[in-house]
Amino acid sequence: MADTSGIKEHMEVIGADGVHVGTVDKVEGDRIKLTKADSGEGSHEGHHHFISTGLIAGVEGDKVRLSANADVAVTFEEEANG
Image (cartoon, rainbow, N blue to C red):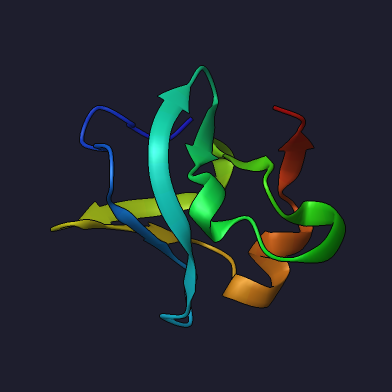
């Protein structure tokens, strides 16, 4: 499991390709909760999304870099209502 101690609220989450995936709301257990503002549109709008900490490659400055490209990381998001 990745070291999540350096992950802070409002950090940008980016894929291995440097593309924006979301913004950290907080870390909950073994996953990062993203802000609702980055939730997408349609059926995803207004929902928090989560990314497994297993996808974290590292924390660089104010960014959390994932080991997967953004388009792949989004498919691993776990949606939660509310």
